[in-house]
Length: 198
Image: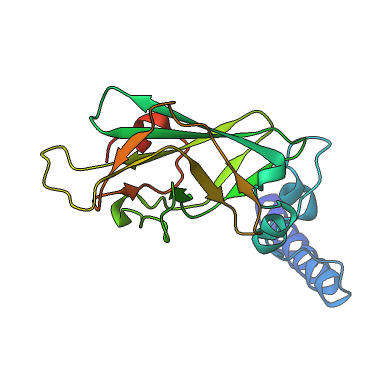
């Protein structure tokens, strides 16, 4: 037998032995198989030192924020030059907690038996949340600008009623304001400009 032939047979025998050893290791549970990303590789996507946080419960979060009330807010009524025949209501959170403001102001002018309706197109997508000292706004169309409104009268008092029954009495100009059947309010807005676009 030549030396070359002997080396070839020796290499073949070594190959068979290695294959047998690998098979034995797999049968003993010591082999390696793809388990997907390891725990270490999964955790490597998180910032160092951070722990996963559960998503907040939206319903519970909302429940923790009380509604704005007359006792925790202050309302001011201001005449504006533009748009014409408009009043701006500014509600400020004077409490120590964030409150939620929904809907539109139930604003009773003078001795009126009912409150004006709200312009549907001004309804915001979500309730307005006010941190302490933050303000929300509502616009009031007092009367028609072309004189076409009916049942005109001068109102010298304003009462805004909250959903819990509390009331606020923002002062009007001493001469009062002229209102007619076109009287309309906007929903509460987080922006003054938005409140005065109607």
